[in-house]
Image 1: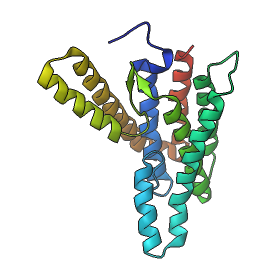
Image 2: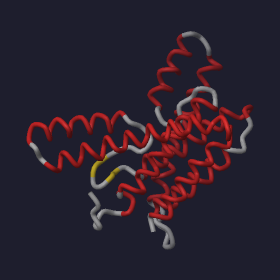
Image 3: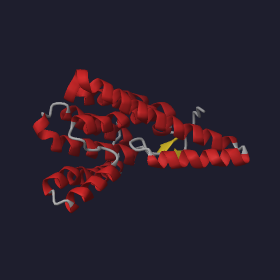
Image 4: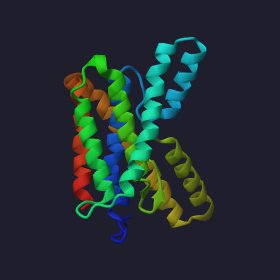
Length: 214
């Protein structure tokens, strides 16, 4: 599965660390920061609509802010991409910003859950915008629906044609989904001993991915 010609930002090992981190971040904001999704913005849109139609405007703000922060995170990643740096690749710069933001979130008390969720959503958006391929195939490191569709599609194609490339594609997608689930599961387990500081494990995973991009 390893291809030495694959760009560093598309290789499976760095991407695996990013995906573990993505699952952990979603578990962190949902279980530790008021049942808000950092990555799965579809869930936030559903909850936003429910809050608006039930007349709970204060609740609506909890879900609207992460949505706006996610959009801004995409724009920020694009800004970094178009401003080259001689010392670091643009994807590494994005990871440094993400690590810094998530490290700060670990210091936020429960009274700042709204701001914490916004920063996590912002950093997630920067990541998903910056790392969009694994071993040459389009994917997402912070959400699963596209990966599930792509994996199932590739599996059906392999069963029909016996094409090894389709088998590899399906394997990659399902591996990424499994890693996301493992990250979320690990995140839920460490919340009790680490509490609000659990997000720092995500920083550690991102830091290791940063090193692997050299």
